[in-house]
Image 1 (cartoon, helix red, strand yellow):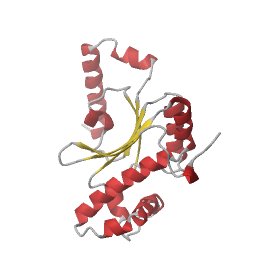
Image 2: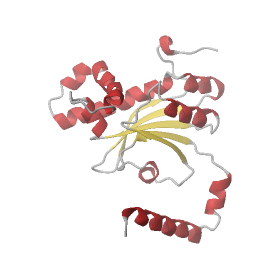
Image 3: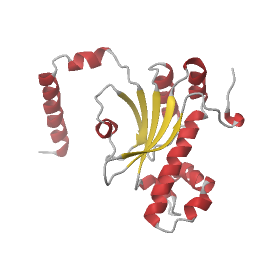
Length: 209
């Protein structure tokens, strides 16, 4: 059997299991979407948002890219953010990285990765902001893991700098922002930072109406 056919068979088995347990499961999902969370995670196949948080379909609105970046010129990310914040009215936004992230590891080298370089440059900027701390770590794995944490912190702050989030903070005192890192070795999530709704940031980045 071809691998692609295995996926289709697994889908049928999953759908049957769901309806056997709850005949109205798909009817409810079809008619309404009210997630409380927006998840901005890494594209890494080992970090599925629903599975590692024990949540069901419909509970988390998900956006994924290489190294869980919040880039202010990324229209895909901004469209997801606008929809989640102002139409779905999510209460929390989670940026979740993971230890051993290949994108972060690549950003710490001088190797060229073709068009990927343009994306990695955003992570290199995080390295530049925290160069003294990062370069003081002699163990390579520990250096990458610390960069993963610092990258998550910076992406959370990038969220706070958007007019999308600031407008919601003014109007409904939400969403709250959270920075997490997932451990591939133990399956546990570590909280790196929390930014409650309405937190003051550098006035240079604040928007006023």
